[in-house]
Image (cartoon, rainbow, N blue to C red; front, side, top):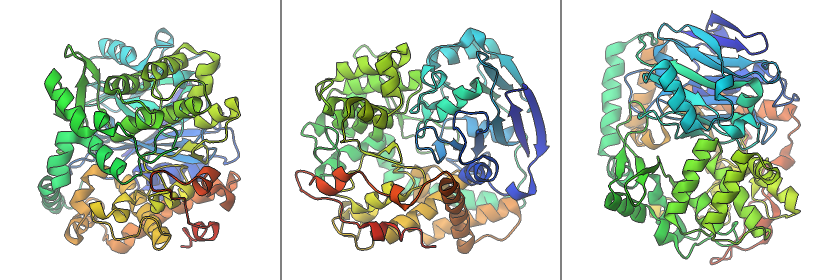
Length: 575
């Protein structure tokens, strides 16, 4: 396996064996540790000194199901700190099959120059002038690139938002059907890619250069047992294929944790109109797909294809966070408008969460009325058009708040909260506040531990146990993101026997013993690298706080506030 480094300033590509310090690392561990080691923490995120690192999980490209996960890392233009953004689709598996452990993009192309990076079936790479693709949205870009290079390629790319170097710009990658509907959305890494002068990475499919397995039979045995656990679990085997992540709309709304109208309420009165059940019924009625394979090697098939009344494709996949951000958060109960907004964000290259929250802040400031889905569509279109307001919106919620001098801006470290209000799920207050990534739900999702409806045992209105729950989950998730297991396939490791199968597979690949202590050490090493980078970038404990609205505004209908003190927050990473 190899590191492939692209110097955009000199248009030079070099290949080397994986350095000893990074052997046996993948995914988030590789991106975060490399960024911490090699990127000046005080540098400009959009300057040539920043590096953009693409690394698939350590288990990507192996026989294990649901491991086509790609970590993309850099210094974030949105937060000013370190960032890893995780995406599915097919590219992680394809890079692994070409023998590429990490793709490192450094420097910046001369002003006005744009390139495509093409990696062929032999793993050889070249930069190709992308002048003819400048300004294209992602769907049109992918169509043209497949015409130019053939259909059997995975494509990772940016849209206009990335070219404008906007702080909420995503990096899009193609799904199993070749559509750029999978997003490394958070942290504005699309802007970093744009600053490098890199429009797209085109990766040949069908390579045969995967890492060897030290114990192939042992690996396959553990992988089969893991897959059986995922299939047998009700959540991953039945509910996700039928409803996707949108199944969360109704239960989160019911417990008063569904942030509505810029988090002025915890319940959306029209949540039923945008629920997973309604979405599935609508898709079936119109002839779309509720069960759809979006990522290579997936056996859950939690994706969907949302279609219009004529059966025409609108978007894939319409997921919980987007339904919240473009629905309840802006007071919009029009599922068709939500689907349209999802497509626009993918096409323009924008994070749906940051963009929805940015629209909500603008509406809260009186710029448009809450509930006006078509106004939201027009606002997002302005990003692609490059208008002054489009650039404000495309730089995220904090940018919108500054523009309107509006102080109800639910961001942490510059990045917006997600679809779980921390006032009624206190554990999410800890994760939002303390994650090195900013307001990130996937870094430490403790909703299940807080809600008795999900089997949780913590008092969701109390501080007791929340710091420990978030800390342990953040350590665990850092390891999960490093090995490349899909979040929704964690049902395979939810039991003691299941996690042992993961340890067995890591050992069977590396040829070295691996156990529970090693799993914790892996997660800790990632968090320590990320926090070290952020400290050098100027972050202090004062950045591990939520906006005052969460402490001072009781959330209807339960009228709760965040009760976790600053002192308790500061104990989260007492390792």
